[in-house]
Amino acid sequence: MPKTPPTTTPDRAAAAAAANGPAADGDLPEMPKPRVREFAANSIGGGLALLLGLIGLLAGAGLVVLGAGAGSDGSTGTAVGLIILGVLLFLGSIFAMAGLNMVAPGEARVVQLFGRYTGTIRTDGLRWVNPLTTRQKVSTRVRNHETAVLKVNDAYGNPVELAAVVVWKVEDTAQAVFEVDDFLEFVSTQTEAAVRHIAIEYPYDAYDEEALSLRGNAEEITEKLAVELSARVQAAGVRIIESRFTHLAYAPEIASAMLQRQQAGAVVAARRQIVDGAVGMVEAALSRITEQGIVELDEERKAAMVSNLMVVLCGDRSPQPVLNTGGLYQ
Image 1 (tube, helix red, strand yellow):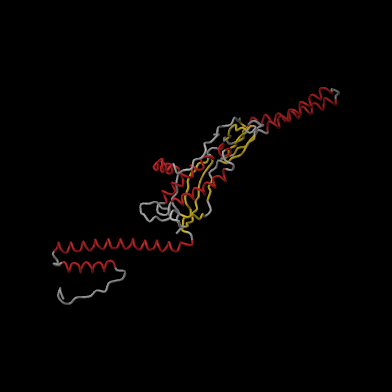
Image 2: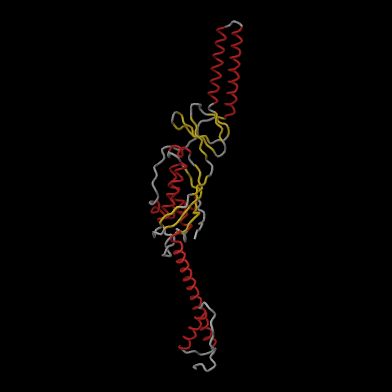
């Protein structure tokens, strides 16, 4: 039957990784070390840059107008100089204003100058950087990714269906842009790979009570999923906030057979509990009869009494008593 295990947070995942020790770390994939790390780009407040740019535009337009007026008065050299200066100032102001960037909360700009990474702008608002640079927008908001229902064979070879949801965010924008081709596709692919790997490592239901299983040890399994996911997406500068299984069930072709097995196990467990309780009640009854001296029973009568009490206490139907109207041994 489908089951939703509990949420796994980064603190619990880290604790699980510490508890598992080096042996567990050896099962994690080894990602290459990042070649670039995020750092703040050199930028200034965009308000001042915008004001200076507008002043430059107005000044350039004014110089062109003055030059045109001087040309009509016969001062050709002065007019040409003013017009050229005005055009250059106008074009320079437009070029300088190309360095303005509007950064919204939850966004960042990765800045490159001729292909070289020069920093990241995380301060929201209007910012100005070198106009020769290129700026790539990267969202640093919290996102979630839900996998499709995956069909995988568990550790016992039984086909099971799983789906998971992962909540994540970009922690290092430089790694997200430069270390992988597409960090969105990278997170999606690595999430599916981690879910499949976890599924084939553990059975859906463990025959051994001490062994881990997907259904019986949901908390431990989701912790292992979070640890593996964090190791897989760390190269892309991504931090896993939480992860959980949203769907966990046997595949349809074996679901009915496995359901019968689960029902049989539940019946056996219930019967075992009933028998344990009945034995305790019979033991208490014999002890009280003996202590209070209600009646003296030999071994044969004790055995008959135990048999009758066990039938009454463990039977599925109400017992039909048989009354003995004779003596004790008749």
